[in-house]
Length: 128
Ligand code: HEM
Image 1 (cartoon, helix red, strand yellow):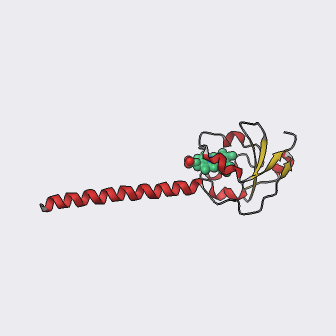
Image 2: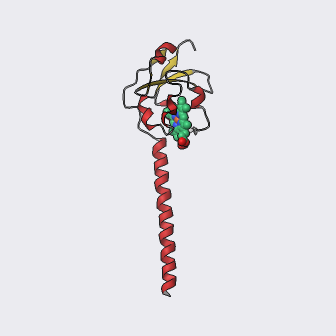
Image 3: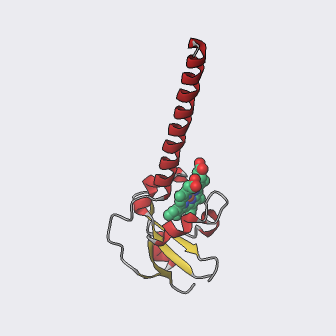
């Protein structure tokens, strides 16, 4: 085989390897984003008033009311442990301590996010 042919084969092989490796690592980081650690603290489950939810409106103590689209039931979520992991950054704070239904059901969230949210549920909203 000519040295030039060998060189071309080697270049193509290295390029193919580089493409495969870069796809694998971006796939992995995407999967990690969608499967973060579960809540680190023990969550207290109950029925909460809007006033109580509103007391938890900071990045280190964040509760959100999110209405379930199918059932219409307003549920309360303690997403404190998720704030730092949120791929959308501080957008998760837009309705801190209040109703974040609209923000949560926005086009930025794939259906898998609904599964993730379940882990943070701390009950339902009273009189909703
Ligand atoms: C309620 C208010 C929320 C707002 C306004 C919001 C906003 C956003 C935005 C703007 C992005 C896009 C980031 C980007 O692509 O650059 C995003 C991504 C994401 N958010 Fe939220 N978020 C909210 C709540 C949540 C909650 C409560 C969870 C989960 C418990 C969550 C999970 C995610 C995930 C997994 C992504 C990445 C989606 C993907 O790239 O496939 N978000 N969010």
